[in-house]
Each structure stands twice: as structure tokens, then as C-alpha cells.
Image 1 (cartoon, rainbow, N blue to C red):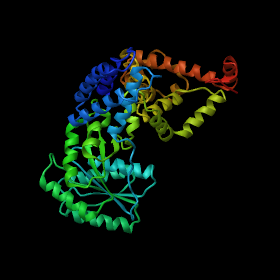
Image 2 (cartoon, rainbow, N blue to C red):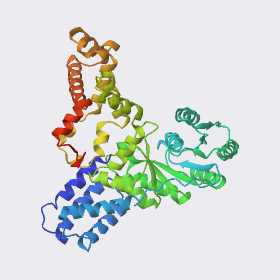
Image 3 (cartoon, rainbow, N blue to C red):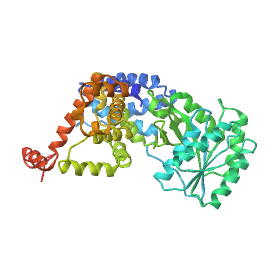
Image 4 (cartoon, one colour):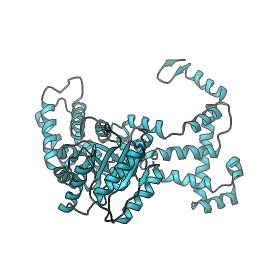
Length: 452
């Protein structure tokens, strides 16, 4: 996410490293590089101009702290201004309405409205504990109605049926009546999109907004369209009373232009971001965390939240007790650990959220390949129950069979078993008296110098 922008900003700020003080000249040089980095990221020109001017003014003025190095001062100011550009604070949904709270989804065709409708429903059901109904008012594409029906079933939302022969406003009104009758907390209305902004589409959605009186009207836009995303959002905002934006496909956006432009140009907060294809891949948008991530400072808070939410605590506790009792760490345990990592988005996604990872050499970064995790799981899946329980049995012909069954080489199987053996040895150190011996070597101190 934002890989190009991260790299270019890092190089820009590096230019000022080693300088004795911040001066108008070296700030000017650094800002020239930052300006190029932002323009290459497809950030809208008015946003770039305002951002550069704000950073310049603060860097030359009283914000310079003599206790910090010039590059540290500049990073601090750039981070704060990035946060302001992205929206300063995270703004959630406003659902304080007489149930059902109606959410209207608007946007162009292909932006991901229907998928985002289902993702938002899942978010509200699982994290906000809401009873959610969804309905499709896209009467121009029968496939869209069927798609919403399918994904609603996947996320546990109630689907209100609609038909291409009905009027969109009537569909919405009938859905509201059904949601009231069924005591639903939230109704999400998926509207029709077009390949481009046109008057007929705008008039239809405007009519729906007036009739249904939604408490939230969210504009769904593809982050990978860059500056066009902000311009399209502005066109919608001139017709509709938008309350917020959902940026989709942000995980595939190496530039970052949409995220940095939308809030400034539309004047409405980015409330959610789509960060993957899975139904759970919708996250609240936190400006400060995104700014930290862009500057290579990581996003530890989001990582902690993901661990809390996505790690299977029962399995984790079971493994911890097993290891403590000195029971053997098995290939089944190893596979579960790999699957837990996958649920977190893979090792590369986790590393992105750790501070300082952006400074690692490319050679090290390239070694972190989430495809290897898939490969290891496939190898374990190709084993028999007996082989998973007694991996020492896996030799010659068994290795060959496992390699063929998993679509890998014998060398891949050997490497995976070697890694597993290393993991097994490490786990032994944490069992029973092994933990006490480790603590004695550390002088009876916990990490960080804390006494027992």
C-alpha cells in the first residue's frame, strides 16, 4: 500500500539528513523532492500546493525543535500535515437514527459498491453487533441483484429481494418498511452505477436520497484511479449530500493519490478503506495511522487490533498449554500457525505495520514471500495423518509423493521439514523447566529489564 509514495518521500527527506540546521534553502530543496513525490503519486495539484506551503511555513517557523535533528523535525512536520490532509481524525458511521438507520451506497460501476455493501454489513454485524438488512436498487443489472444476494448470505446479512421491473425508489421504500417490521438496526441500499457520471444516474440517486432520507450517503470509489477518484467524488458531492467516502482496492494502490486528494477536494471524511478481496477486508480509515505508514513508521495499533480480532484465542491458548507441558510441537500445530499468519494478511502485511521496516534493504524484503506460506501449507496437506504425527518417517519415496501431491519439489519438502524441526527445537526451550532455565540465563529478568 502506497509503496511508491513511501519510497519517494523517504528519499526526499533523506536529502536533508546530515544538515546542521533547517534553513530556507535546504527546506526548499527537500520540498522540491516532496512535491515531485506527491505529483508522481497522482495527488491533485491544489492539494500538493497547499501541503507544500503548510510544511514550508511550519519548518521555517517556530515549530523547529533544536533538540531534534533537522530530518527528524521535517518528518514530524510532514507526518502531522499528512494526517491533516487525510482528515485529522477517524470518523465512524453515524447510526443515531430511529431504526433502521439507512445507508445509501453511491458510486460508478466497477468501483466495488456491491462488494463494499456486503463488507460493510459484515463489519456492522461482527464489530458493532447490529442486525443488518441489505437491498439492491440496481435495476439495470440483474447480475448485481443476484451478486448481493450471494454475498449477503456469506456475511450473515438479511437480503431483501428486488426485481429489475421495479422502480429503485419503490424498492428502497419497501425495504425500509420490511426493515422496520423485522426490527433491523441498519438497512444498506446498494444503488446502480454507470461507467461515467451522467445526468440520468445523478437524478435517480438524488431522488432516492430525497425519498429514503438516509442518515449516511457513502461514496464508493476505486483508490487505484488516483486523482480521477477525487474528481469523480467531487462530481457526486455537488449533487448528493455525501457524508463520507469508502476507498476500495487500497491494498493495490502503490501511489496513494486518491487517499491524499479525496478528503481535501470533497470536504468529506474517508470512513472506510477496502484492503483486500475477502469479506472481512474493510477497515475504518485512521488518518494518523495511514500517515505513519506512509512515512515508514509502521502502524502498530492496527496490528494489535488485528491480532485481537483475527487470532483464534482458543487455539493459541491450547498451543501455549501444550508447549508449557512439554508436549511435542507437531506439524499440525505448525500448519495452524501458518494459517493464523494468513488470517493476518500474511507476513508482508504484518511487517508493513512494524516501525522501521521501510528501511530494510530490498534483498531482505524480497525474502518475505507469502507464497511460501501457501507452499508450506500445501506440503503439509499432502501428507498422511501418520506422516504429520511422525515426520521422521518422511524419507525418499514419501518425500517424492508429497512433493508431487503438493505441486512442489523434493527440495521444497526438505526445506519445509528443516524449518519445522528448527521451530520444534525452539518450542522445547519454552516447555516446563526450559522456560526457567532461560529466565536464569537472563538473570531472572523479564525482557526490558523488569524483574520477576
